[in-house]
Length: 237
Image 1 (cartoon, rainbow, N blue to C red):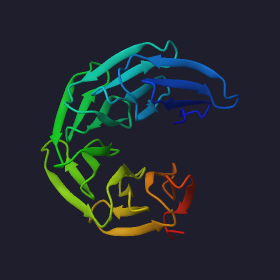
Image 2 (image 1 turned 30 degrees about the horizontal axis):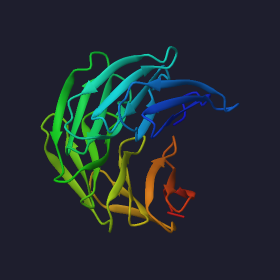
Image 3 (image 1 turned 90 degrees about the horizontal axis):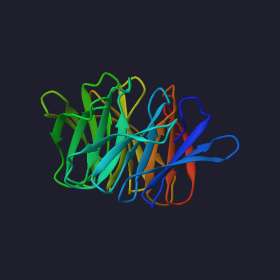
């Protein structure tokens, strides 16, 4: 993942660490060490001062970019943590786990603020809406779901994929959601109605992830067919 300024990159590894790199020179800056199992994800905080990692050791950790020290450990899941992301303002952390729950934590104190009991099978990904009121989850049950944070209730289910879902994200304005799947496609949905707006077809194998461009007009997909594709969110081309 890129830092907000674009000057640095953080990578998650199967060696229980995350690594920080200079984006221009490719020089290795530092290694974040402390997890006991491989890391499926690593992301920067909105201000670029911290790195958040998810691990198969059932925890997520918050690190100082400047010192490389662990600032906070988010422990409480009963299964591997498949993804971890920040809220838009960086004050909260969202984790998704194979224990089938999503947890929302205070980034400052490490205290768990909410636990959502979600799908009946492991979660691959979860995202927090820009206003912090909704959670969007992806799972191996071929469906994505939208949840209300305060009530913990599922308010919408997104069905249409023919394979397990690997990622789920909100558009920058929160009005649309995007899923990637093992069926080789990504899908764009209306968050309010649940209607499928676009299906992005063209990869030869599973789509591992799909993300929006900063302005929400384009979609970038990455696949196990060793390609990445950039699509128009409006036309699907």
